Length: 128
Image 1 (spheres, rainbow, N blue to C red):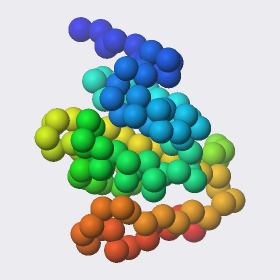
Image 2: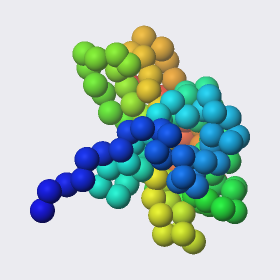
Image 3: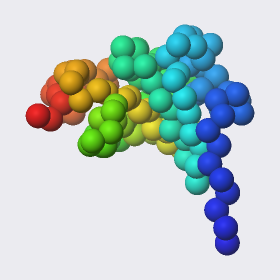
C-alpha cells in the first residue's frame, strides 16, 4: 500500500484547529507545517514558542494539555543546525501534534516550559 504524499502547503492545512488557532492569534508565529502519515508538525518562530505552547495548552477548542516529550535533532552541517521538537498531546481529543523550532548553530537557545511538573523545572539548553 503506497503512502500518501505529505502536505506541506500551509493554506491546505489551515483547517486544522491548532493551525487555525495559531494563525488567528499571530500569523508570524507559524513558519510552516507538514501533515504526513496522519501526524501534523508545525514550525514555530523561536521567539514565540513559549507563548505558543501556553496558548495551545489553555485553549478549550484544541487543548494540548500534556507535554509528552521535548527532543532535539542536530542537522550538522546544515543550517539551521538544530530543530527542537515539542510533542504535545490533547488528552480529551486524543490527538498529538509536534511543534518544531529551528535554531542556528551559532545562536544559544534557552526556554522553560509552561507546563508544571519535573520536566518544566529544567531549562532546555543547546548542547555544545
